[in-house]
Length: 460
Ligand code: G6P
Image 1 (tube, rainbow, N blue to C red):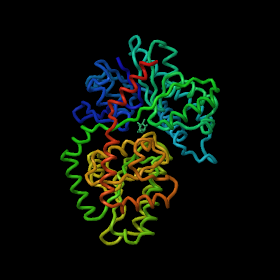
Image 2: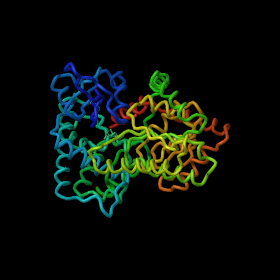
Image 3: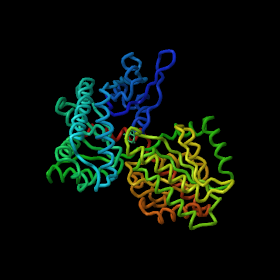
Image 4: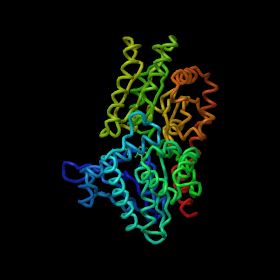
């Protein structure tokens, strides 16, 4: 049997008026990559998935025995909401996410005070409950695939209970380097590196694997034995093709045709997250319009954004900055019949697919990103030989660099230059780059990624 352990499960459940429950696809790359694989039996006939209940409806569905997923033995762990907040908001997203993506403004943050001590204890408690649940579900010698930074302590805790299991930990984020890991309190850095080096640790990019190894040596000493592997995720081509042909995507495509008309189009698609560098993206576009008068009224930048982690003040503040940055560009350049930036916050995946299909340029400029699957999805659905402008600090850069125009995530003039080059690129070069982009993006499927994890587990 394969046991998946991840913070989010395959579905989130909502109560219906008739007292039953609806299952909706849970957000995030981890869950959307694993759900089809596990429900289709790709991980073997027996699969179990342990995740956290995220709200009262999830909890109620579980109590009613209706938190189910086809083909998977699903367990949703019910943590006290205050405990969950400390684990999820304070440690996972407020600390580890910021650390691994290099987002801390170190003059002011982090501040490890009593609240953090309490939050770290909650992180340990929640990680322990996942480890315990996995230990209960798994049979002798089973493979356990632990996903992401929210559950970095699970490998060590599980190993202590069940030495027979084959445990992989896969990070969907970058891993911070040896100077940054020292920002964590010593006990936390030790626990994190100790746990992950006791498992086989997977990453989307060799850069993140190297960072982890260097950090582990920094914290555990030069003899630290790390076993890492690199296994980038790829999009599911069949699912994307089906979505691109869906009535919802086709209707959204027509709406975009009307909105954009004969202008060129730039698209981005991100969660509203400081790591995605959305504000600098708008600032670079502003610079582009300032320096290239001929592009005014000739381009529309559609930002497909989904709100994220709104319980964190940093995320709410960033969402405000994003809104203001877009408004500034529009105030400065809009004319009676042209809106330079269109921010679309609707949580609607077919609409995102339609935007990726219709665009001439795809901007992916994160300050750091574990992979960035959008950079590959764009290639598979785009209909117009779009040009990819890609941050060198996204994991996907490793695979896509020969076809993308590089973006230096902090350099506005450079980013504006990349957007300009992309918009001006001759049709023949666009076509040959787009063909290569498709080829590279289709090279790996979710199935390959899962197989790499299973193989790594069996090599242990
Ligand atoms: C990233 C993380 C995932 C996470 C997703 C959505 O992709 O690597 O682990 O699920 O963001 O974030 P959320 O906090 O909403 O789960």
